[in-house]
Amino acid sequence: MGNGPSNRRNGRIQHNPVAPPPPPRIPPPPGYPGNVGPPHYPPPFAPNGHHMPYLYPPSYNGPMSAPMGPQFYMPPTNGQYTMNLPPPSFRVQHQAPPAHIPPPVAEAQRANTIRNDVNLKKPTLRLEEDEENPGFHLVSFTFDATVAGSISIFFLASEGEECSLTPLKPHLYRAIRVPFEKGFGQKFRQASGTGVNLTLFDERELSREGPGEVFPLLVRAETVPKDPPADAPLQDELPPGAPLPKYIHAQTTHSIIEKKDDGYKVKVLKQTIWVDGIRYDLQEIYGIENSGGGGGFDGADAGKECVICMSEPRDTTVLPCRHMCMCSECAKVLRFQTNRCPICRTPVERLLEIKVPKNDLLNIDEYGMKPSAPPADGASASQSSSSTSQTSRMDGGTLDTKVLKGES
Amino acid sequence: MSATANSNLPRRIIKETQRLLSEPAPGISASPSEENLRYFNVMILGPTQSPYEGGVFKLELFLPEEYPMAAPKVRFLTKIYHPNIDKLGRICLDILKDKWSPALQIRTVLLSIQATGRRNSEGMDSIVRNWSLNYQDNRCEELKGTVEMHYGPPASAAYRRD
Image 1 (cartoon, each protein chain N blue to C red):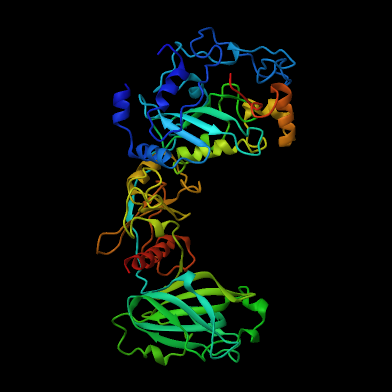
Image 2 (image 1 turned 45 degrees about the vertical axis):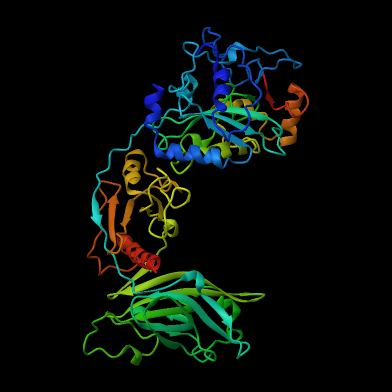
């Protein structure tokens, strides 16, 4: 051990078959380590803030002869540079942050999940030119549905109570409703001749969300669950955009339309679902596409694994920032170390763990980060849809959707 | 000591090491020491179009027991003239301190360090703040000039191989 650190370093580098050839040997700087002497630190700065009369870094041949050599290096305690023990300078400089965060009480709760019967895949939503009717555009997209239902399309419509949709300019485009069967990955395209002539609309109105929940393009997928009330009117008898009764479930995609040189481009602003008389905002979970839930998982495929252990599939999402980046084991460890999201450093309020058994229902647990965190209110049905207390439920809805997609 | 230390090596460190060796980042090499797989010998090439271009910088990197919950400890062994690096080779970089995140890795840390060669003196801490005040407004060229004045021609200017 007495021959200095660079010696040992050079010796080691050859162990690695892929490593580049060992670098030219760099002799240890004078007085380091080996050169035992009393620690001598010239204070870098005078108390009055002026520079002390020495140069940094010390110059060997420079025009100014500065103090050089040993005094600029901290001699190791015993002339050795032990590997497991970081050198003293490390300990001074980088102290591990103490785990000062009180151990949070892990209150796992079963999060409420909401089954979303139908899901329009946002990136697939397009406006395609109708070849048979030049100047007209047809809406197309891909969607998943676990039950049959119908799709309605509105241009420039406002959303009101109970998800009713009212077109502002019904004379320019009459909302249409098209039935669908259940199935995953279905392609939808409006029938030729039912398209819209977007030149009739004001371009500015199409390109932004208007006041009072007015959206340039609204696509609603409605489904009727197994047991509608006996006296309920058939869904088809209700006009498109009528207020939704409680037993109907729907997903609405709110978009704007941007005119480009090569046509119109749809940009989805948000998606909402309507389940049992409550409206939820759907929020995406970042990283869920790469999570262990879908496809094969192997070590070579980075990006699917927990960012902390790099071994287990991800299953835990940080809330409120919605980064699915950890496995549940690492999430438990993380809670004792920090309260920041590993991806974005947003303070963690809750952790959402999603267990996906092979062919069973979802299992979603939530962990409060703060001991004082109120339990997720599963019975908050009477609260408004934008209430934060329903975060878990909203996310539950998204999860449900996304996992269903994954199964297809 | 090393035998026990290496036997309990977390899978993450093994995987990171494998990936560092099989797909090294451009201009960066990191290989673990044989006695302690938590200690890495690192070589970083100075970024192109910077005063450090052409330089080969040697660093050491140590993964503490708490890693990845705590940041790796990294230090320049090659002497370098840089506002964010002090005379002991200690690096002032936020991600090595309070901005550490377990989502960062050896690779990303080394890339960040390499990138500091391109930066002006942002994010420096008190170690070098006073010293670098004079250089804060300097453009790269001026820094290069200063470096050359002290250390001679480029290629070996901003660092020393002593």
